[in-house]
Image 1: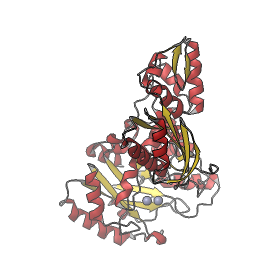
Image 2: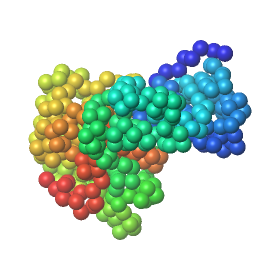
Image 3: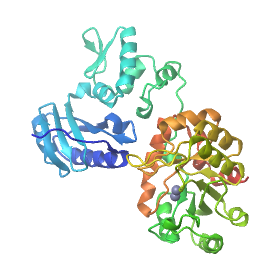
Image 4: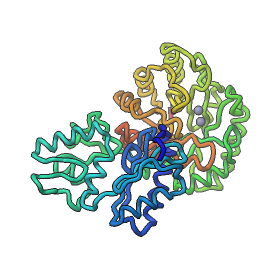
Length: 422
Ligand SMILES: [Zn+2]
Ligand SMILES: [Zn+2]
């Protein structure tokens, strides 16, 4: 036995590992149901520990199989109903064996958040029920037997609350008055508008990136390499961009997917953009991002970004706060002010789906959406595998309560092109 010394890891890493554990457990005869719960299910940007629930007639056997899972570093506590292990990826994982009749209540209980559940329990009491991890009780009778977690919300007069909204940020009032938004879903996404190729700092060729996008059944993509100031990322100058766009025109006939010409253009210190007007005009999608001189005070950084938006040439503001989770703090920037200008100039704010960015995050989405701003969920892929991160961006958008109507890359190509026209 060792002490639990897990630390918070990125959602992308936690979700991947949790799914592997679920697949491993479901492949065992002794396991009948298996689900991810906790903050991983709520798609929080970092995961403190992974929670997994199973039903089984043979709990001891399941626990024995669990500690033998390939990604386990050590066993922390082993019991009949709960076992905790430390995983190689650096976090702990709790496995709970639940009685089949309690599975719905347990999934709701262990999904959390704690604050959300406190509110739900209070409403249960108002209805003369008792709610806990084992069931929803009217006297001694558990009315949850054999039902899924939706039954809890239904029984309490509420709409179903998607796990990503269960943070006690006003969602309870919303479901009680039946005003829950219909949140964006992964299949709503029709294309990815922030991608890099070998021409700047990507790992794959343009053809390889297009082929991978077609496997996602996307209607369109935008290839958006870096501009010249970003030397460390082999940023391209005006001539290189114009030459590259000719190549895209030639490739366009070859593939059954719309390839939009774009660039991720640096926002210089004074807010001007790093390329000539003619080059920007040749682009279908202009992403503008801050990469350098990031140590500015709030006033100067806010002015810088607003000046870029006010050029009226920016379609998407890339990773608006520049933060890297567990690595780099966000810029000092007034996002309320920025959002007002983005809304006015038809500039979408990016929800960058790269696992270490998730920028804007949930709180900043909730903050900026009040100004009627549009969003674009992009993976910022530097290789063909990056496309898979789209679900992390969608999860973040759902945590920010967004519907598909808030997001430009859920539009069909014609509508998107109309939006992009300045
Ligand atoms: Zn960038
Ligand atoms: Zn990028």
